[in-house]
Image 1 (tube, rainbow, N blue to C red):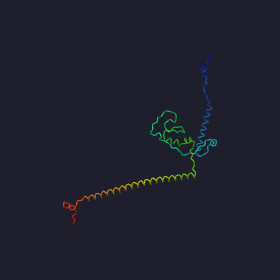
Image 2: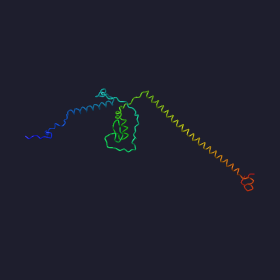
Image 3: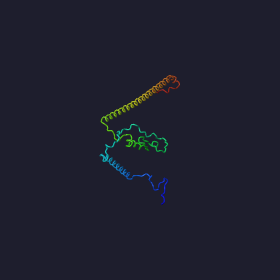
Image 4: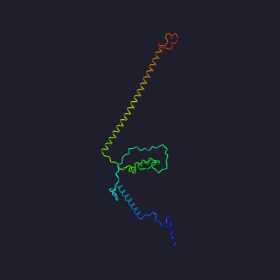
Length: 224
């Protein structure tokens, strides 16, 4: 009887015991369990949106970390930092070095400003900041304080506006006064010039008798 062929490791060629084996039944069971949990979780989320209690999961048994209520953003969102600038783009898998708007909290890049605003206002980003999408309910005292603040702010703006109007009015009055003073000075100078011309004409005038002898008497009045 011929000897069976030997492989490199002195084992029969049909021996595949070195390969990794899988328990198909175990993995099928895990897959069915995962699908069932996803289906039940989706059904519970649908019931929550409708205002019903979850059917499969117990909310008290799920230890979800507490989240802060949604707050207004205090920092300014800068969207035009790289406007009209040339940027060298490199082929890299690092998100912070890719072109676009980079979100440090979520470690992702958004390509345009519209989607970036949608992202930072969305649920995923707010959860990364430790906040929920629930807004704090204002009390009556807070509403009254807000109204008082807006009223004072409006009065301050009105006072600033009135001050500007008064300054503008004073400037116009000053310019009008300067114009009138200039006109009075000009009229006075013109009057003095006419007076000087008249006096010079009387002093340099010709004697009437001499004018008559010289034949200049015809320029006078013809009335007797």
